[in-house]
Length: 159
Image (tube, rainbow, N blue to C red; front, top):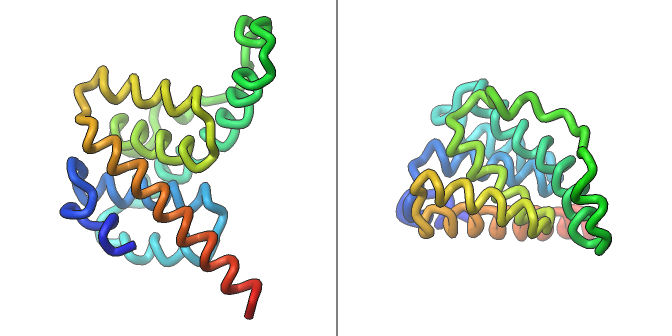
């Protein structure tokens, strides 16, 4: 966990990006104690608006990942032509930098297993000249945070 939460362990990302991605990933992993611990750990790094950006990424992607995974997996192209009608106003002003929101959204989409959303966010990030190593670091943070949440949940259940 320590290795992916540092700039040396997350190549291409700065500490604020690491914090936003980690917080969004913890929220998406649904482990409240881990989420609280990370919010405390990054209290000096993230403003309340930036922490809200991480929360927004987790919430919006939680909704979008389910819907777009359905569209992708149901194997009926008609659904892709229908209007989604999902409210995503927060994306216009998420409280953090747009690239940071995209990185967090990619990480949450990875946790939630939505290939369509991962591909979309990766494409947007690359269009904005974000390096592959930065994108990989976001995915690694998501993977590690999710693994920690699962392990902690299991430890809580066994206690």
